Amino acid sequence: MRSAVVLVGGAARRAGGREKYFFTFRGKTFIDRLIDTLKEVADEIVVVARDPGQCERFGHLDDIKCIPDIRRDLGPIGGLHAGALAVHGEYVFVAACDMPCIHPGVVRLLFDAAIGYDAAIPCWNADMLEPLHAVYRTSALLGYLEEHESLSLRAMVRSLDTHYVRVEKLREIDPGLLTFTNINNLEDLESIDSSAERGRGDASGPGQESS
Image 1 (cartoon, rainbow, N blue to C red):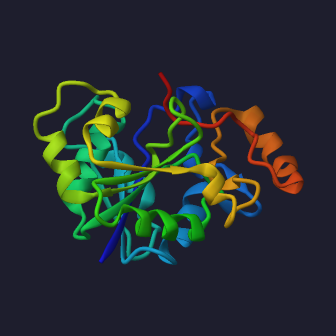
Image 2 (image 1 turned 90 degrees about the vertical axis):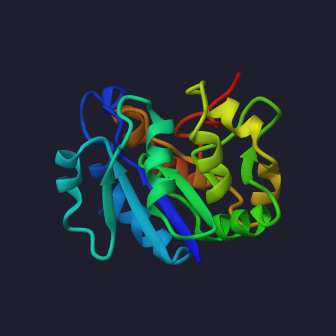
């Protein structure tokens, strides 16, 4: 069984207070695009929100479980913890809600690359990683999150037996690496269509976390 977790619990400050998951790209909201893509590659999908009130925003999503953070105010680490506790698959793909162009073929490759490891993390180079567009072994994720001290995704990734997947490998499936396009503000949203037309995911820079 393969699982997927979508983290939606951020405060949306970088988007002018707007909820990015309801931004629209090519006629569909970000969250609807993400869910439709993940339904192609995962047996279950869990959306992790910051609180029960935010969960109510996703009642329209069919066959999708939405849960609130269990440990509040920890950022993505808190969402990962709640999501890992809720899923049933041995491996789980984790995505941020501001990535509307995730490629199902890339997700499948990451699931395959994670077999025998604790995680499969795309990397641009040694310092630029994509920990919120990655696959984790659920038990390893929970093992770390039960006793961690740092809130850094980098510290978590470095503590696991991680298979780093070069993004050049992923270009074989997604030549423009649009799968990593993420929207940080309204100006990014305005430029995403032109980036897609050029075949480059350059609406924002690569990497969810660097040193």
